[in-house]
Figure 1: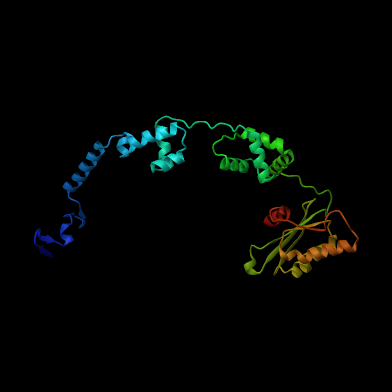
Figure 2: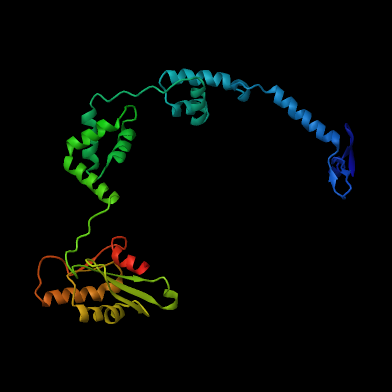
Length: 294
């Protein structure tokens, strides 16, 4: 369990003999002896008393680093540049600046504010709103301040049509729109529910846009275009006639139905005006979706 060396004598190699001796308990388990727990408590107390609450004690080089950070920050250097120069994180630089009671200096306005904003607007086009335009300004002109009020005023002055179109588009997305259907069968909304398609059951529903009446509700075994047309749409057309416009989502199961609507409109010489069939997204075809959910 050991070997001899010429200068150190016998060296023990069995690490199991170095383990702390344990004290058996009544339940048969072991626990640390009391002197071991006392030594750990004494060590913790010594460490706690040896470390003061100052910044210089928490960080070995905090004194020199804090003075350098404060000096550079007062000279107008950014926190990212200070962190790269001092070899620390940006968060640490911000902590030192906050402890020193310093505030970041206010950036000046660009002397050609209107010209720069107009240049960025023309470079990026009318699709850029305020947030994206501000990101472009901060990316290409980081040493200047770009207040929201003046940027928005300049956007309204340079391209008022694009600004109002973007504002109205956002308003339409936030506020509830107005649904227009003056008479019966002005619009017929059709959709499929495929929640139980594992059992080969597809529920098809049709709802009138004006009266909100459920015109058709049929269970189908598949959603092939010929099945949807013959078993679902054709019985509705035989009873109520063809609607002015059929609204569906962009699924392939509606291709034959759309062809029949356009063919009937052509044979009836109904040219111009509204399309006999309109594909839209599932989110916009809310009438049929609501009827299926209820």
